[in-house]
Length: 237
Image (cartoon, rainbow, N blue to C red; front, side, top):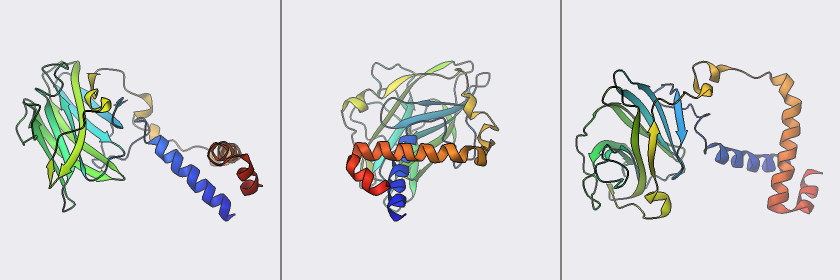
């Protein structure tokens, strides 16, 4: 029995790691908002969630960066200039954990490739700005006021090291230099994120049998890949 528990714990950890790579099932926001749209960003384990009212230009966002340590900063930005320069002109939201354990979150306009991202007022009004760090994830929350009837934005996201409570230059690896793209704010909301869908409770008794079968199948598969069939035979039989 103990062996089974240990094996199941390993598989459960792997499943949690995998689930961190999608946006649609994540709902643990500390501001208690429900975001109608989200997108998995292609680099840096990042995800963007938003609500948007085009008539007023009100954009509520949550930018989430998974698998990040407390010794890193992160930033999400809108660049009205374009994506060719990416950094230059970026209207950024920056966050990182200070050495005393508190979070620092602020706005910064990027005007140079050698910037240290000093605090500065953006071209857009920003309110409800906050950030959290938990479970190796940093989430930035904010509401921005865009020009009314804006439909798309150029977004840039980034991370880098923190030293002595100050952000330092980010890596020039491919993942960092390619962390940019266009975001369609008016794209159809994700049906799985609509109000009420997260409250649906599955029929436990009906799914128990299939759940057990799936668990055993997954256990055999993962242990075959990791340990070889002979070890599986010893542990499970």
